[in-house]
Length: 192
Image (tube, rainbow, N blue to C red; front, side, top):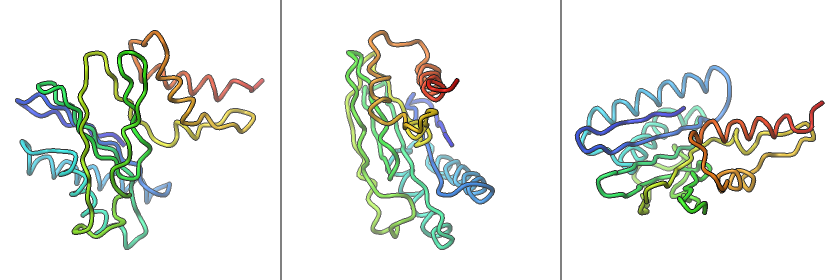
C-alpha cells in the first residue's frame, strides 16, 4: 500500500510504500494496521516527520506486534523537500526506488536497512540517505509485482527492463501510466 503525507507549511512530501509478507486476509489486515500506525506517527510528530522517524516507528510496531506471528514488511520511504531540493530516503528490504534524472540516466536509491520487524527496535538503524534533486527528476517507487510480472513464455519483466523503461528518451507526461502500460504490453507480448 501507499501512504502520502503532505507537510504544511513546509511543503515537504513524504511517500511511504509497504509490502507485507504473505497473502490473503492476514496480509490485508496487516496492511490496515500498518496504515493506522503510519497515521499515528504522523499525527504525533506533524512537523518532525522524516523517513528515519517513520521507519523506526514502523519497525518497532512490526517487531513488537507482528513478528511473533511471522509477519514482516518491506518498505521504502521517500521525502522530497522542494525548499532545499533534497531527496531523503530509507529503504527497508524493499526493491530499490529508481531516480530518473532529467537527462535519462537512472539511479537506484539503494536499500539502507533490513526488513521491518526483523530487528529489535534498539538495534534497527534506518540509515537515512540524501541526494540533491533537479527540476525534471522523477522518483519511481514500485513493488516486486512490477519486475516479477511474466509474459506468456514465463520470462520476467525484470529490473533491467524497468530501468530501460525509465530511461525512455522522451519522458511521458504520466510515468505511472507509462510504466504500467509497458508492463502490461510485456505480459501480453507472446500471447495469441
